[in-house]
Length: 333
Picture 1 (tube, rainbow, N blue to C red):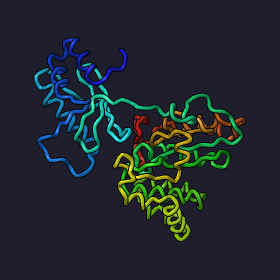
Picture 2 (cartoon, helix red, strand yellow):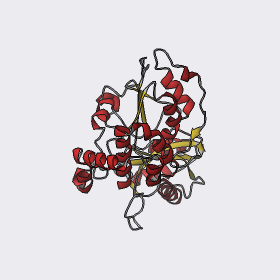
Picture 3 (cartoon, rainbow, N blue to C red):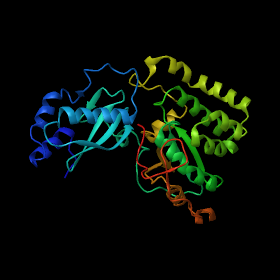
Picture 4 (cartoon, rainbow, N blue to C red):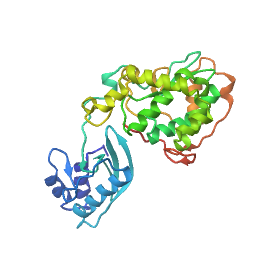
């Protein structure tokens, strides 16, 4: 069956006698493709967690749309995407994809994509990765995005194995979704790579465990004078703090800019955290160290002997921590 929007899928379920007037009810509620489902409660002052927002939406759907239909909606998965929560629900035997605002106030049954990255940029194209003597590997993240952290954890063993053979770097998406602390940690990682690259692996290996940047700076023996100087200079050069304090500059009034890698974001068509490129080709990779290693090694004209080593096939957990997970498909967009 082709992918249908929220309302069409509800109508499809209705036709299968799984639901009766619910599609009619929801169609009457939807104006301009948006359901406002919290008019009886005070609007929260900030964003809700994915768990809080999804539970709120599911409660609304079950209590107001499916109440008399002998059906319930349940959550399959949820992730941040393009400034919203992208949520997949299961109703009966059918799965429905829908979107939520981050504050939990609006449910979007259908979102229309105005432009695809591949139509607006030339760099963001999948396809065969060209082979080179020293592949250029770029991982774009937000330092506090759970899925960006997952990708960094997967990359770390590969980085340690191949950092002398390939040009491997962590870069940053050109906007912020996780507050001022993300700006600060982006700047630290940017400057450590820029001026103390030999210590970056040690710092990042520590940071992804619990986000304790101060302890990790000490553990990695970072030169604090050099770091502070670089951060101040970078902040001034890219107007990061100035932009953060001026909300009129925020993207869609919600997301502060972080422009240290803005030109590369535009050139390659970066769409969120994580986004992974090898030799300027966008690649989708299972987020295990072994799969990342294979993808990079396949981009060598002549793979080095390090490529014969086998790394972990486990997918790291999303977010801070040292556990493993079952899925590596989420992103912050």
